[in-house]
Image 1 (tube, helix red, strand yellow):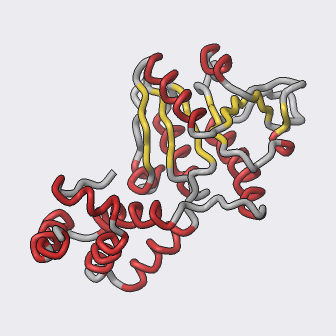
Image 2 (cartoon, rainbow, N blue to C red):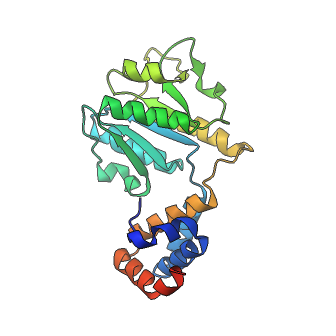
Length: 243
């Protein structure tokens, strides 16, 4: 999340005009094509679908998963790092982690609380598992927000995560091998689910307010000396914002 002076956080949260003015000010320091690209990508972002990966240990897989999620327009990613540090290889991720909101969980309690919060927010928790009688990916409805759980490269999901899931889901496979590489699994699931979601009549986009917050965050990452400029913006408009 972006960092702003505490005194102005309330105005940013509650006043659309303040957000609009700040976005206009920061975007004036970008080339037009770059600013238009940020707007285009923000308009295509979604939190209707998200991914949780558990204790991945291969850096190339960690990085490939982030890149895949960013390419498919996901904004929030959940990373369980109880046993293995989640490391990003910049050459593989291609900077995807810069644009994502990544939530980390470092203990069993963190994981349980995180998943229960997602359920409270209306998410269906989907465990990707091999199994003849599990729901097929193609048959999974897109109307309900969904978080897809993916386990370790060698052993798959832990029993705790399987137990807490609402729906076990299988990816169709027709060969001798029982599983895909983790990054391939994520790509297949998102390719199928996200494309079906975007072709549906369901409203999957971020709200206008969410897009504004995201654009402010991205502008901070895109504009040189953004912290200095933001401070200058608020100091020059302090009288107006305190009304």
